[in-house]
Image (cartoon, rainbow, N blue to C red; front, side, top):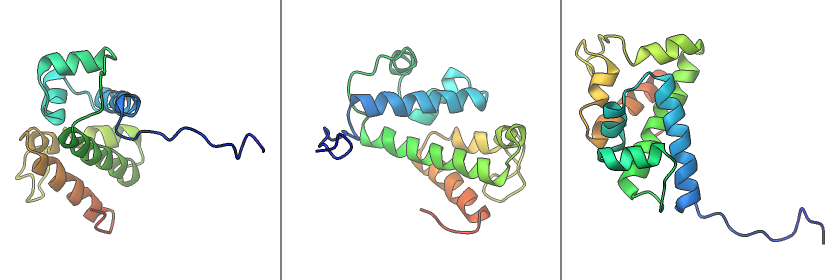
Length: 137
């Protein structure tokens, strides 16, 4: 049997390794966006101790469903911005600029995200999906 066809161990999408990889992506994204630890904490919905353990690579188990949900919206936001604003500096700056769209009421998208609720992340992701020309929820 070819090694390409040999059975492999299934990947646990909800396990510790997948969680650690998802968090590495989140922290790179947060760095690109210029986020402070307190903002990262709100976006992930976790306490300070957990945030800094994760930042240090100490991920002891899979992520809770609500954290996975938050990450999925944040990754959607990031991907949509990369598509809508292909110049990296513009994509990164969008979160920090006042926005006249009714959803933001003249505030920044980041201010909306800092509401701390999963719904805040969801509506920003949906807004950007709509700007891309479709509903991808």
